[in-house]
Length: 487
Image (cartoon, rainbow, N blue to C red):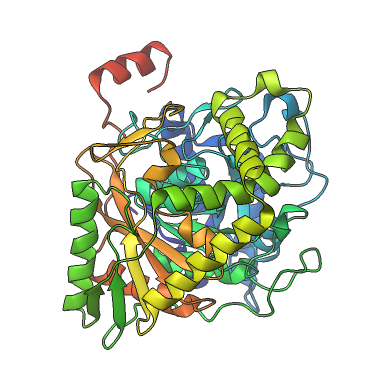
């Protein structure tokens, strides 16, 4: 089969069951592809091929025996390094912790293994998953397969790059300010930020209502498949909700749905190519039968940033300081900047001030979405980030200078309003040669609607057959990579 490594999970499972394809054949194709292309993108922290191939053979034998089979049986799945795999590294990209080992499986890893999935590789992140680019001293620079000058985004950048390059079938991700949706958007994939409590995490940060773990995939159906396996009550996370979300497996009709289009979420400065692609998605949904109406929100980038960093100043920032005490000189500049910004925000704002700001934003979103089934907006106002960029001095966004480069992204409001499910799907290509994406935002815990709308977008704007050439690399960068022995 041509490009077997790009086979989607849902199709692969059907072929496994019909005995038209063996899990061994798919795993071998993914391994061969990894050995060919991963040197140029650096998506994996480690590969587990010696364990994955025997697991694929056992999966093939289970299909031959028949009977009741687990939902992910035989699929190659790459997990984010922060999703601990018992006995394997759990460094989170930190040089000082490079030899630490996970004492147990992370809940999402546990559920993937119980579901028959085969973890064949683990994916790169920035340090402590605190950046929207993916590079670290420990693992180096992860590059976007569509154009290696640019980042696949972060913090789940290795997951996005791996899916785009065809070196995994499914991947795990996490999201505390856009870390699933941004790399999905920058690499032409689908990413799901589940509502808080849907998918279990690890304490103590499982109690942080901004965060969440979830799936990344090449299709909407595949994201739903993995989300359903991950979801549900877990004894180690008392924030989890009973039952899996009711996600439709196939293309959904949007006839009769009312969708709000919000291009700037207040005053985000959106690049022209990002705006054009977002409007193309809105137009396609209209043609598919949805009523799409453009709305405004009373938000500002500055208020959202202040609210977000106040929150980080009381939870994630102190957690990072505890974990890195005594090794601060080994940290990347972006990590030190994050902790300093969080510390400063907590010094300027009380915890209560942050909660007031959060609940105001949530109320404003609820009011804006009243009478609509979902909201559509870009995932990032800027179309690309440099692969090795630090962005300590901010970022230019459509002619405006943003103080913090995170202000170029439009994902954080929906971590603040984190009971809302959000599905990121591709919207087109940016002028610089990498994909762009949109967010489909649902009402609290209404996962089914965002998947329904996402499936409709996928049906009217097909994307699954578009893949990077892995050759889109400027001459200067190509020379640099060649000198380093990277093809």
